[in-house]
Length: 226
Image 1: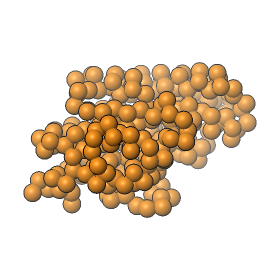
Image 2 (image 1 turned 90 degrees about the horizontal axis):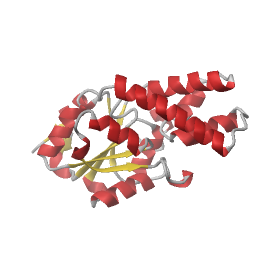
Image 3 (image 1 turned 90 degrees about the vertical axis):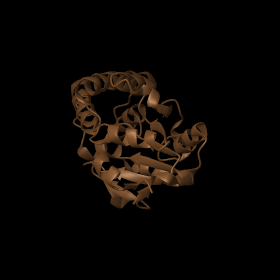
Image 4 (image 1 turned 45 degrees about the horizontal axis):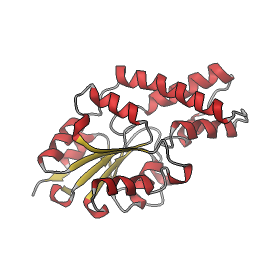
């Protein structure tokens, strides 16, 4: 059970958490690498790169499959993948069930909302513009321009998001869908809820999240306003 009076902020991951976009990312990676490089990516490789950012995923795939991609090729591929997925997310994917009700619940209880994501700010702004909801988020923090050592699973993205919100870890709740993201939030000393999907293996975590939910309607059932 969560008490709304215990929290000043809720921080959401985007891909896979607010929208069920991981299958779109995985299928796009698979199709584009097969078309451009003639390789078929295994589910293991796709799963291992959940939540780390497009450019780092491309680099990891290039290294593991000995594709020899240089920095320009990696950036070009990352931009190509991002644009394809951006178009699909904007045209095909709705917010995960219960998300809007949770936003409204948080606002009615004076809880700040923020996003901490490996996605680009362009994607976030474009997506929430179609809902006319961009302004409900006090902070949108993207890890795209961070060095690899400061991206999830490092706690820095969440520490920085909390700094921008001016909130403390013990007064913050996070929602994540990947092991990298869960580790990042938990290592920042934040109460963390995992949103279940087919790519997450909670057994790999050194510590378990506070709760595992199928969607945000289930999360809302756990909140008390007392």
